[in-house]
Image (cartoon, rainbow, N blue to C red; front, side, top):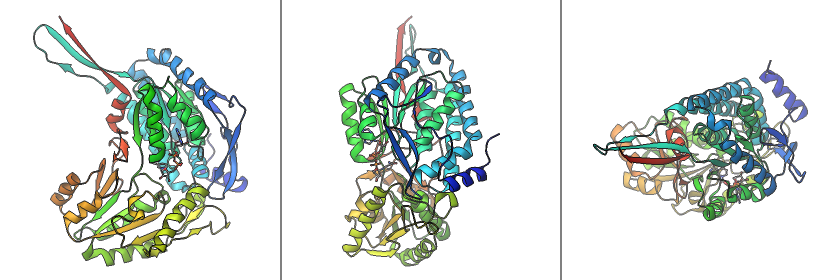
Amino acid sequence: MATPLNALVHEAQASGTLAGLPERHLINGAFVPALSGALMGTLDPGTGQAFASFAAGDAADVDAAVTAAQAALTGPWRALTPAQRGRLLYRVAALIRANADRLAVAETLDSGKRLAEAIGDVAGAAATFDYYAGACDKHQGDSIPLGDGYLAYTVHEPVGVTAHIIPWNYPLSSAARGIAPALAAGCTVVAKPAEQTPLTALMLARLCMDAGMPPGVCNVVTGTGAQAGAALVRHPGVHHISFTGSVATGIDVMQGAAPHITRLVLELGGKSPVLVLADCDIDKAVDNVLGGIFENAGQICSAGSRLVIDRRIHADFVERLVARARAMTVGHGLRNADMGAVNSRAHLDKIAGYVDRARARGVAVLCGGRPTADPVTGRGWFYEPTILDGLAPDDEAVQQEIFGPVLCVQVFDDIDEAVALANGTDFGLVAGIFTRDFAAAHRLARQVDAGQVYINEYFAGGVSVPFGGNKRSGFGREKGMEALRSYSKLKSVAARI
Ligand code: NAD
């Protein structure tokens, strides 16, 4: 019997940790220490205290994991039919659900996010495995009509060993988003979670093993980006890299992949606009703008971090936003305040730096604008829900990804200006549109340069809807059937018969 959620929360609150958390790499079906023996600590952002340790991997550990993943490509894993692979993935989904409470509490401790959000992330990870379980035996090629005397067709073959560099903002759901389609396509996996949040990727890989995946199919190496991550993307045995993180690291990953012509999907964040037209349902738009920037304390690549609003409704709309933001509570994720912690001290300082510089430039800080702490313990890394108004299109706060609970407001007078503002950054991940005018919404959806557009519900969609960026937000698509194509090599066969 799994321990109930309230008992796990009580254990975590009383002891500051959970018993039995993984503390080693998972390589070739077994938990193993770093070959160097080195360990690192992971910190609870809600308290700022270390609560668990994990293996500090380096190139030698990465090499062991890639070697295991290469060997597993040709073993019993390859012998499974796609439908059998699908049954294994369904089993992983069921095991995620059976262990959901433990995964969620571990995720909250490691990332600082609210428990309610972590529970949602775990449910999303299970849904991702279900989706790709069902897709395994439907990933079919085409037959191509060349006429009499010829037979031509395409087949999807697994790309091989796939590397997954996972960020700290959605540790479990990002891991599932990459690992599930890679396995569904018949690939093997070496994942490297962020050093701030190593636990739930290890727990997920353990569940893959428990589901019956052969050793070496799903490996996890923990450690820093500079040591383990850089070694993984440069390893000649890796055939595909999925990277989610910052633009600067993405550039380094691209350079690391180049010598071996390793395939690459880059998901590099954004500065996504939420276009609010004067005819929208104001109450719904207010709810969505708040959720779009304050969920996960704004640490979301697809956060709606810029409100681009019609001047005619700007004053009233912003007044409502400010009242709601001021009423929000912050606190340790396990207590489910309105907003949890930000992930690290360094990241808190980075967010504060952006707002302090904006204030010094004379930007209006309508609410928030300060670091804060858990009101119960006085500890942890928190930042107040913050709204900056009247920003010029070239302002640093408009142009750069703050990755925190900071909404930047920009005002437009006509729709052309709205499009220019929406497209006026180097990013192109997501755009939101709020209007009751169906035709205007779809005209705007065509005009914005973004990988996905949400109309009248920010974050609408799910695992079946492809996701990825344009411009400096990266390239390639995850989720949906597109992800299966990423993890496959298309082979064309043409025969004279
Ligand atoms: P990062 O890009 O440095 O880290 C992301 C992942 O890459 C981690 O697993 C890290 O260990 C790994 N990594 C770091 N250096 C590497 C290297 N040289 N080779 C291979 N892997 C490497 O991000 P960060 O420093 O943790 O955060 C900085 C900024 O990145 C944030 O402020 C935010 O703007 C952005 N970010 C975006 C996302 C997103 O979802 N797109 C997620 C996390 C961070």
